[in-house]
Image (tube, rainbow, N blue to C red; front, side, top):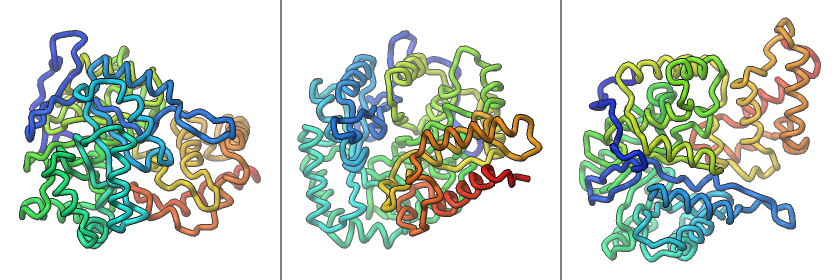
Length: 433
């Protein structure tokens, strides 16, 4: 059940009676008034430069940031590694055109590759330069959890980084220090035990939370969100939400599930259900959305300027939808691109996105006896070749495993690529049962 032990105190009412007032949450630690919807800067719009390289469309970013700030969004989350290292600079250019007090900056110490004191500190200092600021409102140790205590100590304790960051916080260059988490329940318990003992004090924590992962994560390598939320709420630690749409998958859900949602609220998008789910829980300070264009930005402003929490009955309905979602053979990829670049050039997120899209849209050929099998077969193969260049397709994976340690969802990437490659070959040879 969605509304289990940590059920929120739900009131079916708008966050603010003003029709144009962005829903805000007050940070109980420092009184910050944070917009309930935050701008995740991992999916800025991209264009090609004169050399054919993917670069951020700065003009589009500026327009989106202007609209966001004008309509009350004030939390912007980025990282030195987002979009091949381009995200912070683009955010800095766009945000610096506005008064600093108008927005909160959240960025991260993403020292996955170089965990040396020198390399980590250089990444930290460079974030100030890229973001054109002299302090960070919310600073995160990026994606901790995998490997538990041993991995954390290597990245932040043994190299002196934790002590260094405490000094930066004392100096006012970091206002709030927290972490983003991907991992198992046992790994999360370690960080909570350290918090309880006063050895690692967290001002906030960022977790993956949505109505599917609430109770339908595997619960072993990936902790269910209801567990994470309950652990943080009982300690009064403010919570920032990532992946409320599961990398966009909850905005484009299977047709029969979307139909059930639309039957209940025809005027609302299926994505708004996912955002309202997260916002219903009072321990949530901010919900991040990686908006790639003006359309989702405007829709999110509309949702959170007229925010309505879900009722108990609506939460139960979403649990039914989540259960139905689990019946589809989807790959739990959120398109974060942490697995990229693949050393062998495989377009891992592109392949998974194409596969999931076919399942979600009902264009997935399952067997030769299926109605319209020939049409579905041709559609999948043609669209696959158009979406993914031949040299970057699944059958070129050599199972080197380089991607495995980078995936926050613990996807067995080489195995899934082999499965898709076999499926495509079976399609070509008409071998599906």
